[in-house]
Length: 235
Image (cartoon, rainbow, N blue to C red; front, side):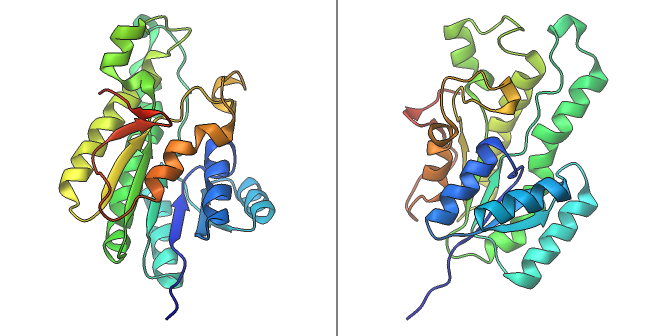
């Protein structure tokens, strides 16, 4: 008896944590779809990793719908969805933050996850072992913010933190709404990526440990959790 490899989609997969997640899942035998909106970068990254580029702009519903239609034609299911695409585009103290700046950031970090997840729900339901991993951050944890005094905007940009707090709640809502689908949030930790100018304390491989763990959970694994590579992250 033969089985087909799990099909995994990683949004924002052309660099950083997304790219490393693609590499690691491919090494584990997954059929990996590298989601990226930039055709040149997406194709180049996919070619280097030996995976498939999937045109996908998480801020564009038509792009999401087209990507879902392509995956349906080519695979007829999706086993793993890693919502990794994110930006840190509004870096300012909260009293100087504009509504437009926050809206633009939320359009990627929160609404992008909503668009993509909802767009792929029918394909996730067609899987025997569906997993959704939302890439969040400890800076969105209320408990950690209070414990670690993460209020200096130069250390924790307020807009980014707000988007990740909202994302963890969205994760809980999806975990409840999608029985049979394991939906969890992962905190990569302070990882060296373009998002922080390469100033992180971890490698991208270390930063993807929690993501890969959640993407490959057994069928009796948890849902509605928030973890990093060391364990549970408090809400």
